[in-house]
Length: 266
Ligand SMILES: C[S@@+](CC[C@H](N)C(=O)[O-])C[C@H]1O[C@@H](n2cnc3c(N)ncnc32)[C@H](O)[C@@H]1O
Image (cartoon, rainbow, N blue to C red; front, side, top):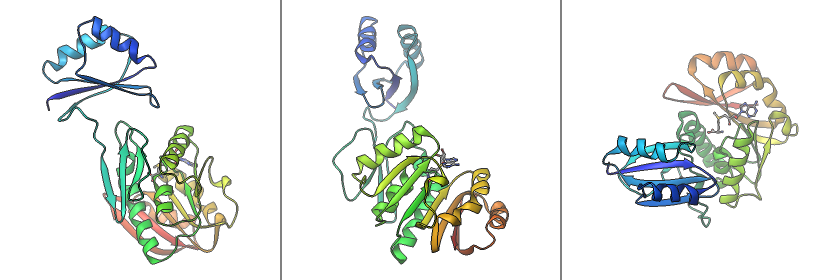
């Protein structure tokens, strides 16, 4: 690992760089991401602890978001694939590519790779292979990854909601970056944002408490014959969940790393 990357949250990148230069700690490279207020500094990895101590002394009030060791001075743009979908975590907006789905890279890029997200994505791909997805409601959209996937798999209209404003902003940014604004609408809110009986498919990857609480109302937003893909729980909790949806038919289930996705028909 020959490089040390330091990520500093700041609105004054020039000021930070000047203090580093004056203090004898010029980075090998620096890059500022204005959308994130993030200054990325690269140093050689040798003398790591001493260097971090010196940086902390030179920048006592700065917010050190992350430090990491890396093989390359460049930020990697990590990708992963699910069926025909290729996801790429990018640091900057770039021209839309029909072959890829861009997601704003966050520092850990964890969300898109969680088992429950993967289960929902795989299920979505399988459903799209069987027939048109129709109108999709993404309940608890986070970064918007499932909504974007549904749109790319042909859903003509997708409503994505989240109660967390940061998630809503991130999802909107991702929708814009993929030029899918005509088909994907992101709204702050929850189930009540959806008109009754207006969706063919609900995607709900939530925590078990939330899914149990919201489950009884999910059928109300579905058209007759609609489906729901539920995730965010494990096989031991399936029974409790199904007890909340006594009229639902189990159309399929998939398990990964102790997590489950359940496809229900109504
Ligand atoms: C596990 S994340 C899933 C994110 C994304 N859909 C995915 O599959 O990776 C759950 C999301 O649901 C949101 N959430 C939690 N409770 C909610 C509620 N009652 N209504 C809408 N969104 C909710 C959270 O803010 C979070 O962004």
